[in-house]
Length: 572
Image: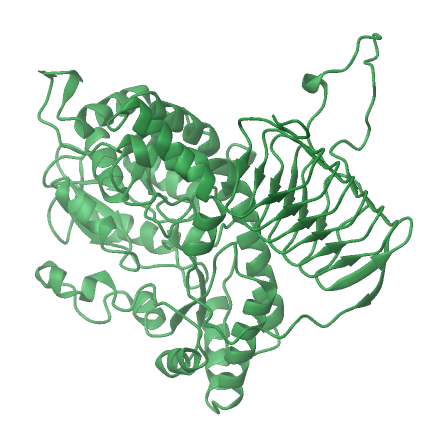
């Protein structure tokens, strides 16, 4: 509070913010370099990005997000309730408990003219222009000029030429700069309370993440690998047991199985989704297993008992869980989800007749918070979810030296705790995850649309009963290495997930799998390529990626032939 300004203590101000007189700010955040004019009010839970200009007499209510480089003219009004009322039906005054905030987003580079009014629940696209005095009632497309009451698209403007700077495969700088004040505040809270291991910040994050996943329990640990290892052990997997998974995944999946004392065996993938093939799984259980005299399911390959299935929700799309769970029930197996790439991914379960989230369907599930994940820590981190209180209790023992309480050890455990600082960072990020995932889906849909006419590239297939969160956007092309080199020369980053299937890795030569053991995985591995995918990817950057991909495909005479063969394989 100053003589002329009312600025609450909970306002987060970035460096270089310029504030005029007679303003009212509370519970909001303002990015660095932004200028706020006189007589502006910005309410709690509103966010203004970097290098914005908010002109005088404007009102930004709760639920408004202004991204970077946005211009807001004089007297612009935002709303967050389409049907406001002063009183309830019984005549009592309405309070905050009587309505739900509807969120409005103004994307990067947009301009809102003087005197405009924006109704709640809309998005103004990147570089769009809203004319003075307009009443905006629905979403405004990127690069569109709208005007009138209600506002209508008048024309499109050409976006400014993309900068010659490289397009990274993954941008971890921008989101953390945008959240700098919130993350520093989270760290400061730990510093001032000496909360470094355990404590309420960890518990609060566990509770919030369990709610996000629609699960009953979350156990925070120090990596996704430990999350999967502890989940398997807590579910009763013992040394020598066989655990089934796929060869097209990161090695952490099989490391967790091996480190739990179990033996990984592989099942091939579905060529459309790249997740575990239900048909291949059924064949393995029926043809490659038998039952011993005690009724145990035994692998004919290793002569060991088969105990569990670990379906990997690869690239952010859930596996066909209903079918997997039916097979698991038929054969008496435990299902533990590897959801390390699938924070917030959803699957419509016909069994339950509702959408269900990754982490809520198996007996337990593992998540990674490696910095590049959809929800990433500022270091290592992971968590396991479950609806079984006994499994949760066992995992808590395993992560903390087997302690039921300090210095009382029920079992011999591990040092696998998530430190408090990382829990505080994750708690600050978690409320943004829904929007980040929605943006990834927008970008994936735009990629699909822009690349649809190119017969020489196969874009990701999303199952009709899945809502993927696109941790990765993975395409298939004939000459993957040549395309990578072409994109590199154009300043565009790419990745391969994964170049060598696990059964052909040097680390697993002792497993005895040879070439051609898993034909779909081996066919896919040399063709898959991950394009840039992150929530802060701009339309201009994405256009550069697509143009570079197209320029490569136009010069490759063998590309169309690949598309014909790929289509035949996937739809066979």
